[in-house]
Length: 251
Image (tube, rainbow, N blue to C red; front, side, top):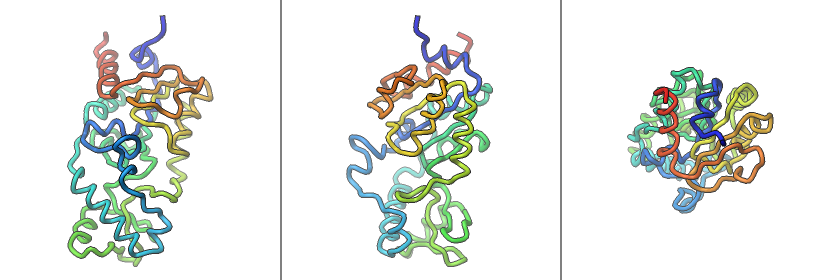
């Protein structure tokens, strides 16, 4: 009889959890890709343009302010909470998220167990000196002046997210791939697995022979790969927390 999701969770002790926008839609945050996604209606601002053109910096901060005012009060949902429960049960090796909403952190996932591979929108970061501070002050300033915020050192401030054309942070990649090499199960939750190089992280574990489970409502770029052990189609908030409840309740 084929193993179910709960069976894999019960037997594993070093789970690599990889999450995408689909786990935050129940919190009211829209997906970036696919039907109705943000990038179907808005073109992204590329990092080089941000650094070179004032108009691009204004456009970028306008978009970020709009998102902050609309979704800045979003709360973690049952998926985030279930991941925290798995961590508390000693079953999680690392959580790697593509999301920039900070909801894993807000739910209680510990810093040592979390890699925000595309950065975080909760901080503003100077592009020269690297100083980071809570983003609220920058939004307040921009809303008042409509001028892109500047660091005390003179560098451009930007939400500490990875923009299009900007390299991922090497320490984050190193932590993620180290976990891929050390885990005994990899689960992708709510991701289309279409964004490179982030999508190579769970695949690295699977290619090393680690069982690979994908849970997503829509199709993913990894669905047809032979390394996929279990593919569950449906809402993550319906499938994943139920399995976690099952194993942690002892059923």
